[in-house]
Length: 115
Length: 111
Image (cartoon, rainbow over all chains, first blue to last red; front, side, top):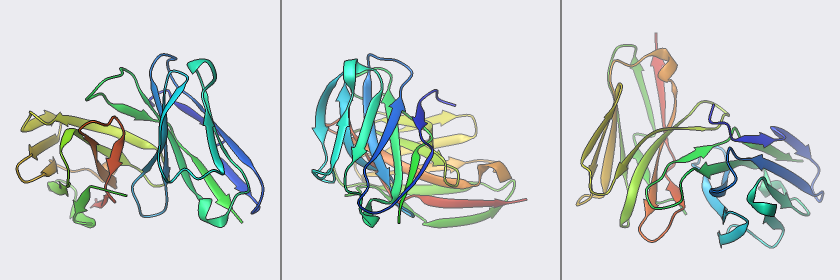
């Protein structure tokens, strides 16, 4: 148990609805990452924050996706107008010490199913 | 896009045997990390090896890194049924802090 928590653990929604996921890291002053994992694949990077600043976004992150990290603490990932292709596991990870070569600790993930 | 390629895609062994998984990647890296994922769960960090290191041990795990061949291997010795999981290699590429994962090796250890 790394201490990174994610809520909800499972979300089933209908196509076109908006969903929001939350990630609570262990510590506030660190890097926080979002990844997406589809069945049979490894996780793919979406975006990351250094404290409250969003420093990088993948081209996978369409304009329907938005992430925030207010005050550098917890983070939310919102998907608007969900599509069936958004069905995946959304993983949050925390890097405890910023800098090259440090470990990312993952939360349990939120599994999204879009019907 | 995924940089790492794990080999084999699936591996089935008996308890007590050793399991070896390989990972190849394409670009320069800061480090390479191995993670384990049990079915439908989050990823558990196993070991990190930096680009200037060649071998690292942690318990029953042994990781090697050959930057000239852009490859790494993970050896699990004396495997147990509880080692059954998917194993992913992930690279932190030079100039970036994000991780690029492979598709994973699914390991099945039978009692």
